[in-house]
Length: 426
Ligand code: UDX
Image (cartoon, rainbow, N blue to C red; front, side):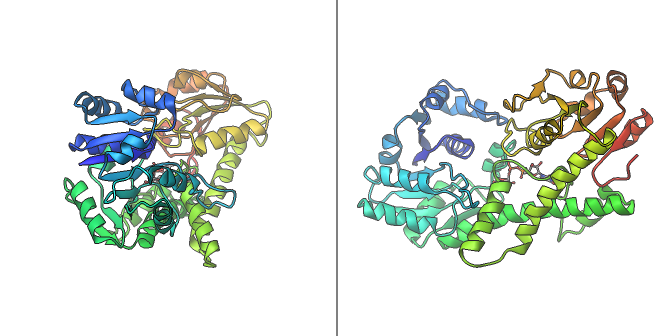
C-alpha cells in the first residue's frame, strides 16, 4: 500500500522503515530540513539498534522517501500516519496543537477515502477533534486511533513483533484498510472506539510506571527490614498473574514517555473530575525514589557533597538508547552538582548533556580520584570493568549502584562500601 508518515522522530521513523520493510511504499514528511537531508543520505539522527541498516536497505529499494513538505506523503497515500510530537503543557496535559495543525494542513491533499492514523500519544477525544478539523477543510478522510508500544532501544523489534495492534474508529471501512495495512502481523487486534484506543496507550504506560514504583517502594521496605529486593521481586514475579517485567528497582522511571504519559493521564483525570490516586502515587514514589538515591550518594561520602568528586557511569535514561530526555541518571548528576560536587561521567552512547557534567571517554577514567561511583544506567560494559582497577583508581571506597547492576559481593570483597537499591548494604 501507499503510506504517508508525518514526523520522522523515534516513532515515525521506526514506523516508516518497518512498513517499508514489509513492502509498503512509504513517503515521509518531516518539518526539520536538516533531518530530511540526513535521512535522504541514510543517516539516522538518533541511536536505535538496527534502524540505520534497515533504513538503507529499504531506501536502496526505493520503498521509502523523505520530503520536507507533507504534500506528497498526504496526496499519494491511502493511509497517512501522524507521528508528530504531543509535548506536555504546563499542567501535564498533552499539547495536540501540532497534530491538529498538521491535520488542517494535509486535509487539502488527502484522497476522499484516505485513512488518517493517529500514532502519536494523544489524550482521549483527540481523534474526534481531528475528524472535526478535516471536515472543516472539506476532507472526507477517516481517522483511526492506532497507538504504538515501541520501547526505545528495541523499537524495531517491537514494531515487527508487537504484542497487539490497537485500532480505534467508528468507521468499518477504515478499520478494514488498517487490517490490510497490518496484514503481515499475526497478533491480537483490539478494535474499539477511538476514546478507548487513546486511553489504552495511557493506561498501559501508567500501569508500567505503577509497577516500577511498586518495586521501588518494596525496595525501600526491603532496606528497612534487611530483606533482599532481588529475592523478593523474583519470588513475586514467578506468579504467572504478575510476571517479572517492570519490577526492577532503580533510580525511578525516566525517558520521554512514562513520565509524560503518567502526567498526561493525571491531567485527563483532572479534566474529567476523576481522581487517579494510584497513578498519582506512582508519580510521587518516582520523585521520592530519585531523592532517596541522592541521599544515598550524600551518605556514601559522609553527609556533605561539597567538594566531593562523583563518578557517574551512565547518562542515558536506559541502556540501549542515547536518549537523555528525563533521564534519572542526568537528574542524579545534576542534583549532586547542585550540592557542590564535581561530576565526571561516562556513557558509551548518550547524547550531550548539561555542561556542568564532565564527560570522559572510558568508565575507568571517570573513577580516577572519585570519592564515590554512581552506577546509573545498565550498560553491559560497566560489568566488564575490573573492580580491583576501580578500587585503585578511586580516592574513596563507596559505590552507589542505583541499578543493582554490579556484583555486590565482589564489590564488598574488593573493600568497597556497596550501596545497592533494596539490598542489604554490604
Ligand atoms: C515505554 C513503554 O515501555 C513503551 O511501551 C512505550 O511505547 C513508550 O514508553 P521506553 O520509555 O522506551 O518505553 O522505555 P522502558 O523500557 O519502558 O523504560 C522506561 C523507564 O523505566 C526507564 O527509565 C527504565 O530504566 C525504567 N525501568 C524499566 C525501571 O526502572 N524498572 C523496570 O523494571 C523497567
